Length: 284
Image 1 (cartoon, rainbow, N blue to C red):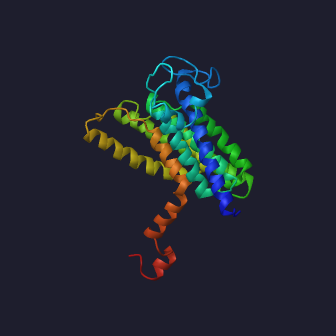
Image 2: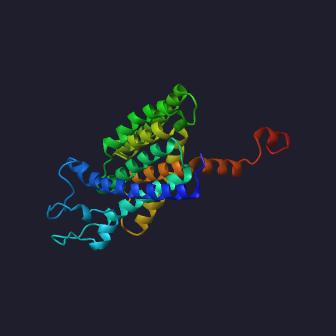
Image 3: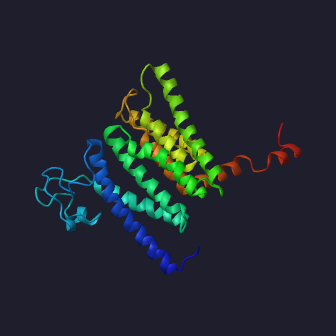
């Protein structure tokens, strides 16, 4: 479906603003869920003095800038992470909209991206991945795939459901195997169960190809970051580094450009079909 330019850019602005608002809500979830607090009640309040935040002081991005990152009442500093989460969510929503446009998949991708942002920042703070994201994704993925077969690149419901369940099993099973072997070799936990469940959720929602892509990209980024932190003497070799953010980053990259990256790689690695290579002497 092609939209007139005016409608397209108006919708783009709406998606960005919606992402900012969702990011503001994610900030509440990131703070409260690890503390087993309700995300509904009480309303937004200053973490330092507990004073309720007025609606005009709760505008995404603007309020933090206007108040110079401080509470209006006690002047306690408010972490710039609140601003970052809102901006990141708005940017991700806009990027996914620009890539996928008017599609039944776009709302699903936006929902999943929001869940990944929440999981990322909770993991950075607490080294845990909430079951609301991991188990929720493992349950919701097959349901959405059955309802929207295009989520798995299928036209029929049962094959789409099968692809979702395969992705779930592959994602969960591969990291379970890595964690089990790591425990046997290193004599300690090499990876948390939340990571297995998160990759299982990614597989359930995005499919088996996304699992393989996520493992490759997250392993690459995790290794590079770990080596950089060790070189900067910020971490020791045995230090725990959250892996969830790397899985989330790779999953977002898959939603944005994963299939195109795989196609470009295959075209570079194998520019001619195998049969053509054989008949032209391309194989030794």
